[in-house]
Length: 282
Image 1 (cartoon, one colour):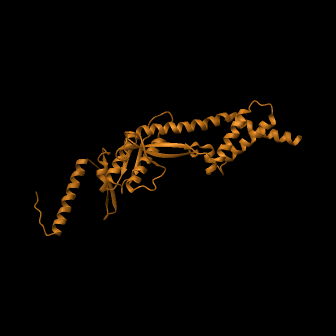
Image 2 (cartoon, helix red, strand yellow; image 1 turned 180 degrees about the vertical axis):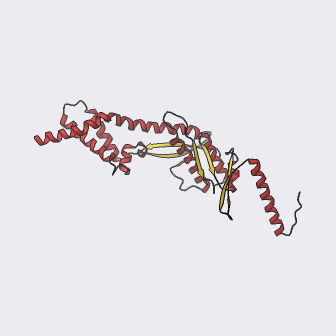
Image 3 (cartoon, helix red, strand yellow; image 1 turned 30 degrees about the vertical axis):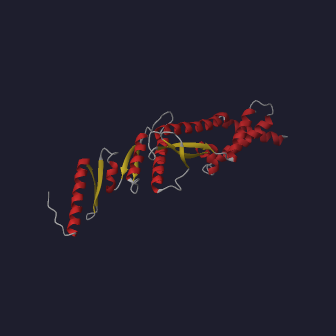
């Protein structure tokens, strides 16, 4: 009897300090409200995606689903049981059930196990959910396709899908609670569209703009036309290979056009001379 009393006393010592700081009901409620918040924020992004073309005549709509992981279901079931018996006179049974919940929580927050997928799925609602995208007809809202990944798609479709999802993901993580758009919204895209079709790149950049994300493009010189619709100013990085020196210079679009025209004329001259044709300076 003395041993049982000692064990029970230890349970009380462990449980009540934790529950006095973070009541079990509040933990349960917080997990549920975070799932609802995720769904609400996705709907905010969906309102923007509905105005943004994914492919001609269609747009993307993001969706989510709560996965039924057995250990998460078991934990939720135990929590509900503990909460439902909060006023029960069977103190020993209450403490035993509470001890089981506390042990699960201790394992989930232990530094040695907190980053395992099992622990993350238990206490982080994002890991309890799976996400997908529907391609919908812009007029009828009919579902054309459901995409859980870009596998099986053409190169252009993969690029458009990946770019749109990246933009939506950034908008999600950069939008604080209580806001409907990002507050800190400056991102840098390093050669993100180097090998992407220009039409696809422009479409994806429009998604970034609609989501109120300020994009800084780091792109090769050959892709400058892509930045024409998105960038108000340009910084050109130039490297002197002979002296191993680099410099940045700010230029206008007018200056860029002059440079491109000079390069075009030089290229024409080289090609003409290769064919034995002499061009007149006009």
